[in-house]
Length: 550
Image 1 (spheres, rainbow, N blue to C red):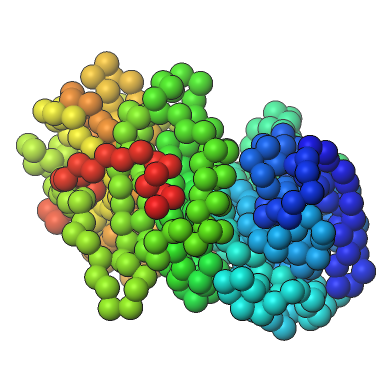
Image 2: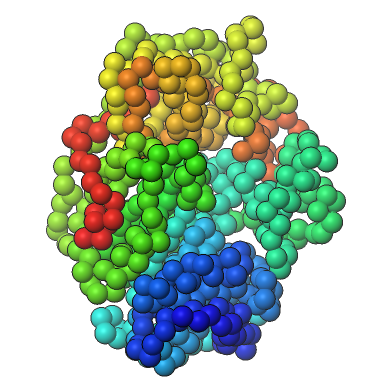
């Protein structure tokens, strides 16, 4: 096999740096396309792996990054038009058989998705809900066909693999219920925003010199202080917080007919976006949700039985998708933590009129302050003080010293192992004495030795009259765990989760522009409050590769 660098033309004449790796031989090949802002060179080993399995493999620097010219505008540049032009270019090559799989992780998954969901005649990136640049061009690259099957729509791939997808500015900036993702966005913008290359350790270096950086108010002007440490400006930072609409890619996916493999990790902050994309997709869709974080890597201590060869699985799925062997259904697998067991999960069949199978998960309710549920330790009344916020980077909980900063609850030891697979929620009856209040719920598993392991987290923002009791539902994400007998569940309900999330000022002002903070008195009413966990009632253990490739 051989790898060479070419420059693929786009509608406005900009040529994008692209590595092409081809197997030996002269036969026509299906192609895999990766468009990334993180540096195409980092994918060369992956390209060789695809090529060794009979695919033409391409990795491309997106416009304005690394060796591709142009301006870099995250989530609102030319990704749709540039992706379409590259797909059309691939199909025009002598080594191409016309079949293309768009592949990507994180922002590169966004690139794959906007290319897959583009409509003919669409201006750059307007279909997914992002505005084109001033230099946006509505021209579409010419392609070999207009239909599915043996013909292909102009510039649209035949299948897509979206791993830990970052679905847009709005999705990455805020939680679905409003709170701002401060740590992750500051880290990403410091590493990748408004620059041609990447510096993954940029935020860590700046924080070493300026430990209180993320406390800066207002958040909108944090970029100016961050720029002092970085030695460069971040002009796109304010646009991140002005992005309002979310869910556009998921909505567009409902009309898609090409196959999707959505890959995520139960420890990834975008896991719920991965699941939403899978559930909303209109074509054959498969979900692979493993015990991973955003990098899709397991802890080195994880036993071999819990590891998955993602490269081999991707190849197997791509072959099944391109050959039309995937059933027109929606199903997938969730890993039960590091146990090596995988649980089958299903959505509704895509065939019109079909109904979903019986759910193998049961909603198990753990009421507050009961002997068999979660016992209240302290903090039924507490103070959420943004000057002393509960921290996201510390699992230790303080003793009750009369100044509780959170409500703390604990379960009795589990009498037997418990499998969890699916969505968890906390339903709480609460009161705040301020017009705006964030409610953060953190669930931790304490093993029989007392070691703490994060299990689930959710945060919502509520506005309403001060002192008014409210029933609030806090989504805790999609779980995939096996808890051994003797495990205790610890639940914390707090008003902040800093620095992962920006502090709510409690004044009713937008946390992004607020400059004044005030404490908030909180009350959690145990009556009517409960934790709801997705306990696997009918165990359906499967092997991941055969399940997602059928």
